[in-house]
Length: 138
Image (tube, rainbow, N blue to C red):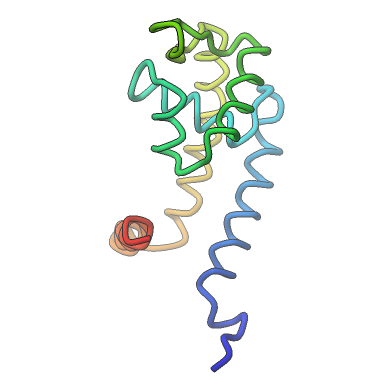
């Protein structure tokens, strides 16, 4: 049995994510951030100081990808590394990183609200729950 594009959840999710990411990246470029970088900054803002391995785990990304994002954010002075021991460090937001993250967050809220306006509140909650269910089962 073949799966057509019209019936493929993977295709729908991928193309939707790519569209949203492209538009979001364009909208936050003025804050010197990408969507991936924003995600890391937002995570640190909400949870607090984090080790790169924990960031990778939470975001479901490989450590090499997170290391690249962290290096870029550090170069921009959006984060700083604080040593825990000889082999480990934690990531901390700088004031500059916090300010740019907060500006980009306003754009993220606008995007989220635009999506919420397309569906009912119940459908939106259901969508979030179903996507979480799928993610947690894979």
